[in-house]
Image (tube, rainbow, N blue to C red; front, side):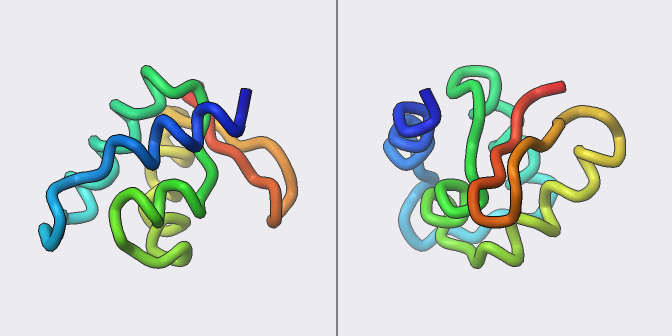
Length: 82
């Protein structure tokens, strides 16, 4: 299922050349998680044209607030709605 959800996230990018604020990126990924089940940091980064480090920072707050949960190790980490 994870390969399929990464494909879904990658197929729904934002407008080319647009730069989103952290809050907008967080809202985007939460919306994606409602339909795609899970997302990897790499798929998130590719869809929004940001670095993997940025995705990890973006997901820190929703995770601390209990909105998302994480599974896996560093290389195969996945984020899900809580």
